[in-house]
Length: 153
Image (cartoon, rainbow, N blue to C red):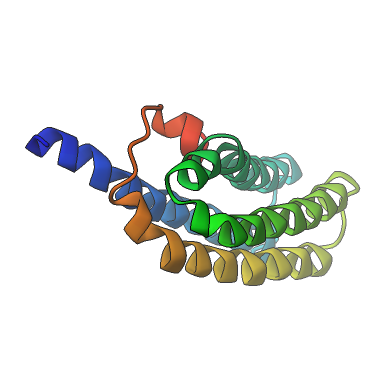
């Protein structure tokens, strides 16, 4: 295996960490906008919807591209992947509730509660995913665009 091939293999684990960090940052910016009572409601809508779209797109990419590749290479990880997919579904439900609250101009306190709920589950999910998959991602051969695998951020 060439150095370039090794670098690409290791990059999947690096990319996962980077994407998780970008989503954490998007959440932080959104939470700050809500807490500050962002003066432009339209901007707040963009922050909230942007965060929701980023996290949802990330999970859809994993479900569609990454997890099948991992399961094919490491079938023993199927239970882990199913648990992560269940987390994705739970988070999608919470994101739907957040979107609905934003769309009906819910008070900042309610938006903050929604964001806190998403944050708690998202962080737990990210930590579990990294703990269980980073090592596998260092050797996974997957020929796909990063945006296809992890969503476009």
